[in-house]
Length: 149
Ligand SMILES: Cc1cc2nc3c(=O)[nH]c(=O)nc-3n(C[C@H](O)[C@H](O)[C@H](O)COP(=O)(O)O)c2cc1C
Image (cartoon, rainbow, N blue to C red; front, top):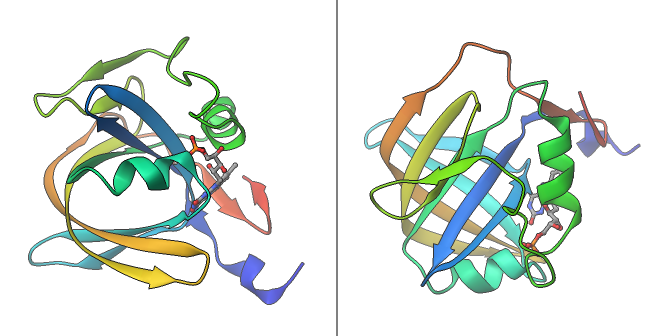
């Protein structure tokens, strides 16, 4: 393991609705970057299908997973929406903005993309949080040392 593996992150599923095409991607590289207004940043690989979709939309959702939701992290983090509908057997609803919100998660935000930055093989999207809610008090799922914990 390299030293960067010692950076522990909360695991989320970033959800997307691009003109009716729904997708979600497991993301560990996510962090808060501003208090006023509240903003977060996510880092998305340029080879991901989600990158193609994010380039054409102005909003995305963030579903913070609980420790019991490793299977969801693996589902959305091992398959590509290019080949499968990852939402097929997942319990979710669409928000007023049409963004998928997975049921039974710890917390949910909706973000408006306000900026982006090139970062090697990834692109960082900065999102202003326009809606947020806590759904349950469980401890979030973590990713560190190259594994879910
Ligand atoms: C725990 C975990 C964390 C991940 N974190 C990220 C991340 O921060 N950014 C990213 O681009 N991919 C990340 N991935 C990989 C994507 O989730 C994976 O490549 C996914 O299948 C891409 O789906 P898509 O092609 O539908 O966009 C992660 C995967 C796992 C399992």
